[in-house]
Length: 146
Ligand code: ZN
Image (tube, rainbow, N blue to C red; front, side):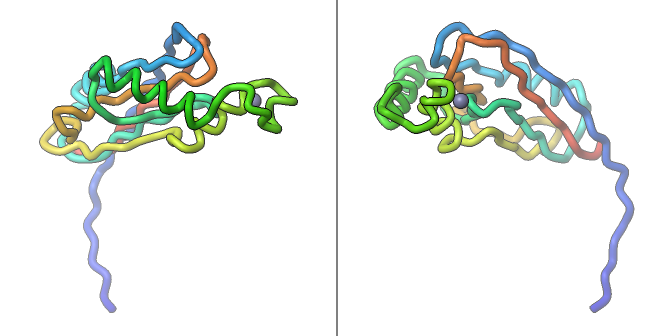
């Protein structure tokens, strides 16, 4: 088997977003910040990673519609009720937040195509706060070619 390749110069950019959530469970829309950062990087083709630093937050992608956002938080509280007798609650009383975080996931990624984040019209990017209010950090990494 013969491998062929070409050398492409890849640029990597990072932005750390620090924000303060307002309630124990909360959704913060990061879409404008992420798309603005991607635009500023001036990458035509690549990938954008959005990653939360925390074990009691999550990153999700969906429509920014008030009813749906409330439905998500309600569903999480039904699936992972606080104080249900979780074993981790004996340590620091936030097992529900850890469990919801593990099921939702800590990161997401989008392609960058034609210089913009390649996402659908209703695909907004949210940090899900599950044990707030707190100061939280999200890393946005853009990797690609100009
Ligand atoms: Zn904990």
